[in-house]
Amino acid sequence: MEITWWGHATVTVRDSGVRVLTDPLFAPRLAHLRRRGGAVPPPAAVDADVVVVSHLHMDHLHLGSLARLAPGTRVLLPRGAQEAVPGLRRLRGMRRLDLVEVEPGDEVKVDGVTVRAVPAAHDGRRLPYGPRRSPALGYVVEGAARTYFAGDTGLFDAMAEAVGPCDTALLPVGGWGPFLGSGHLDAGRAAQALSRLGARSAVPIHFGTYWPIGMDAVRPHEFHSPGDEFVRLAAHAAPAAAVHLLGHGQSVEL
Image (cartoon, rainbow, N blue to C red; front, side, top):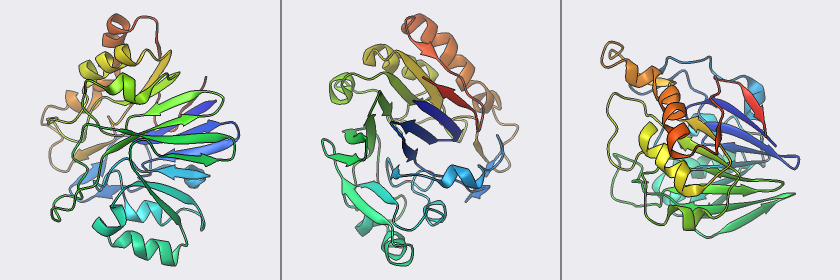
């Protein structure tokens, strides 16, 4: 099983010959954010057998990046996504994407793997465009191994129960600005999550990629440090787990 981190929350999980791509974001700029860490992922990063989208925020459900997927690619989305984001319906028609809406507990089988949607503690709406709610999700990819992709989430009491046994946890440890609100994991809370989950290994994600334009001098350590901080804190909170701190475009075999 191989994991490649492309930056932000975009990861390729290769398991049992199946490529699972998470929250694809391949833009050099997104509204007031610009990519400061790592190059935009190469064309090969778009290759996927199935894509999972954790929630509807634009840095996780990015229509321009989804438009680069091969026609017919299956995309798992939170329930209600197509009603909340009309652009998805256009992609379904123009790119012939196979859009499948799921909610916690749903399972989708793709060749040799099963992808299961699990809950997340996060506001999943397509802000700021109105009240239509859609659940924020994580996903468990189960093939030769069990890999948990947390998407965006805060700690919640039933996290370990909802996720179940997992070998590897892909955990967000930062954000795209100097302050993290509720419904997010920082390095410390991610270390606690790893301890609760009991995963044998972890890869920190969602840090060191995008940053608001004009804010380079505002608490810059919040951009650079979350990955190293997670390694340090996880060594105390979950000493049996191996933490793999990847650079953009780097892979680890597990």
